[in-house]
Length: 180
Image (cartoon, rainbow, N blue to C red; front, side, top):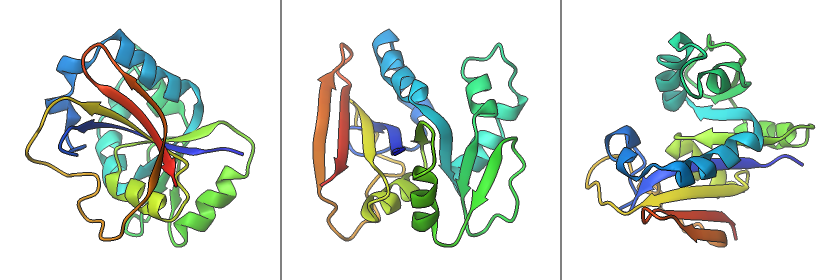
């Protein structure tokens, strides 16, 4: 059975928003390997509306010479939104209504993992509903002190089980969790 796997760059104070403004000093080949492992294990991308629109405004205009452009442009994309009526980026499919049921159905189909990037609200929603199978965090040793935090809107506890941990040479922690 396929898994839904979320991979996020996150600061020590829980911020996942705008990693392009604080993440790059910590990126090296070692972290690239961590990210690459998730990419290689997936054949589908899952986005919330806002992350989808951010990616859609950039990636379709990028050619094959730009790293990851072919991956983002050619990989099938699932877009969760109750406000969008259509999705235009190639290989995109809109999911609305009972998202948990639809993703559970899709997980039962043949294929590799379904990878998520960004989409923090969707990550916490799917984690709460038991649809998210793994939460992979690359925790950066920096307090950003502003921006969207992963669990800022949660009021209920979400118990997690640590599946693996690794400290990278830059001080970034690679942590993988599952719903307990």
